[in-house]
Structure formats: structure tokens, C-alpha cells
Length: 48
Image (spheres, rainbow, N blue to C red):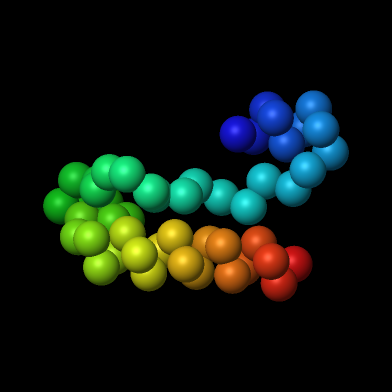
């Protein structure tokens, strides 16, 4: 994703967790965390 952003001039907004959870000590250990982090990443990208 970062390479595509560089090559196209698009902005890389961060990692979107859309189909898998992280380890228990990672950023999205539960489905609710996945929804929260992904929503925050999208909102941050749109606001910038």
C-alpha cells in the first residue's frame, strides 16, 4: 500500500484491519477493536 501511494501520489493513511485480528497483545485483538481502529484510521485519513 505504501509503495502504491508513493508511485501514484496518493496519501498512505495507515493499516486497515479488515479481515483478521492481531495477536492478543496487538492493536486489534478483538472484533470491536478491529472496528474501532479501522474507523479511526479512515476518519483520520479523510480529515487530513
